[in-house]
Length: 132
Image (spheres, rainbow, N blue to C red):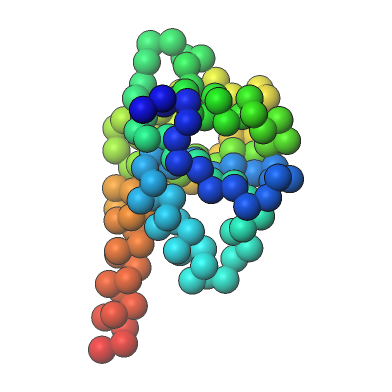
């Protein structure tokens, strides 16, 4: 239950890009989409935060993210794939503000749906409809 240690998927000790998600299911959904797109997803690292929240202190970042970047000094780029809801958008803004001086931080929410699991389900539905 220690929030500093959340679910992560790291296949390379040399990864310099980190993809960050609110929940494990979103992380796994993103990778499923990447596999289907034949991308080289396995060169990057992936981290689930176990949820997010916004605080009054603009320099606050989620504990899991802070612990991860402290242990992985080679990370240069952070991709935020947080939810398309008020909390996810506010957390994204706060993380970008807190880290933009030290990292390249990119906001990449799902193209549709609330989160990447919704986006994956939408894509599966579209493919099923196309094959009918």
